[in-house]
Image (cartoon, rainbow, N blue to C red; front, side, top):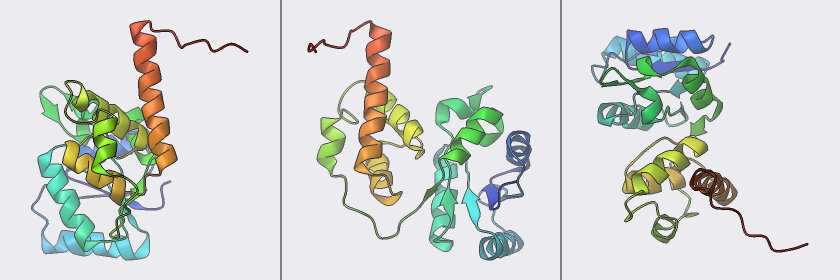
Length: 193
């Protein structure tokens, strides 16, 4: 059983999480967040800690941001958008148990004192903005790092606010580039023995 209580948006999200892991969940009922719901989340936060697992869409991000401001020590998990999409709908309820377990295995803590580990130059140099496949690259790197998909500005924010290290970033980029090379048939150069 997961120690922390997982905060999701709705009842269907709870059902999806419970298919994946043994955990207690609280639903926000979207951005409704009634006082009794906030009180339940606050109790869980103080007693066991919480993991925020909202939908990978703009509404989910607004809810995450609101909860992160209120519960500074909350942990965050992100299911990639493509793994939470089905039947013309995006949400945790659409994610497979494997996708949910993977997201929960990469939980991050939001750091209110951001690092300056990454600069905007890192985003540009690594083709995470300004090129045709930047969206795909950010999604893949975000999935690997466990920080989810975001536009370039949001991705930059997450790199510096969710404790991503330079080594993790390099590993995620290498994984992405290795996969791209394998799928395109490009062989690694041979430098001799």
